[in-house]
Length: 72
Image (cartoon, rainbow, N blue to C red):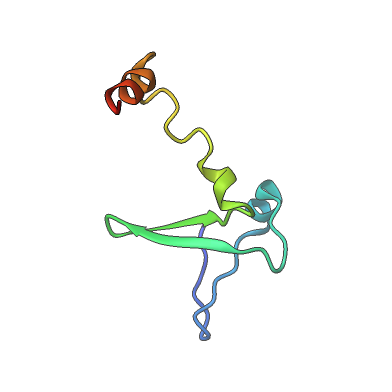
């Protein structure tokens, strides 16, 4: 799919994508650049919830316990 930038520098997200994502008027989107590519994401309604589980599986079993013990 493609979108065209209007004279007001706006784009329209195609209806099928809006429906699949459940986007409606007034919803916020987050834009970022990564290696010269535009990334468009739905802005989380609760940013702290978007981070839940982000590091799951990153550290092995017992890692956290060892770290806490090293602080003593």
